[in-house]
View: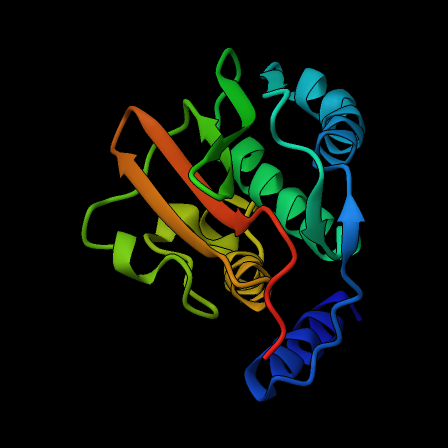
Amino acid sequence: SALIDDLFELAQLDTGHLELFCDVNSLSDLISDTLEGFMARAEARGVKLSGAVSNQVDPVWMAPEKISRVLRNLLENALRHTPQGGEVRLHADTADSNVVVTVQDTGEGIPQDDLPHVFDRFFRGEKSRSREGTGRGGAGLGLAIAKGLVEAHGGRIWVESALGEGTVISFALPKGQPAMS
């Protein structure tokens, strides 16, 4: 049923029918809650999970349940691909009139040839990153949903990675309420 919910949400994003209930909210509280929710999972995997939020981040015009989903998707991926003894860091800061959120891991990294496709639906990269290869993979929808939700907020998302060094996925959201047209 989770896969059906994901596909339904993607269909809504594609057609522009996803309703965002945006208001001024605390991104720092949302990040703190998300980190707290993942702490036990990180500890069980032997991965250090940390976070930091700049004082200038709040308030942010957003739909908190949707940005929470983005954060969860990014942290799930980072934890899934970070080995025991590794680290996942969630950080938020401001840049120009945007808030930039970054999830950085010390996992296996993503091959350069795969980077342009990581936000594509059902993309899981190499066999070692797939569900069949490790028992750890998902359906390949998490990053596609994250991209759609960030873009629905008027933001953008991008990835940087190096094999053997880890991955950094960042997204930027406009800090203020968009101008009405």
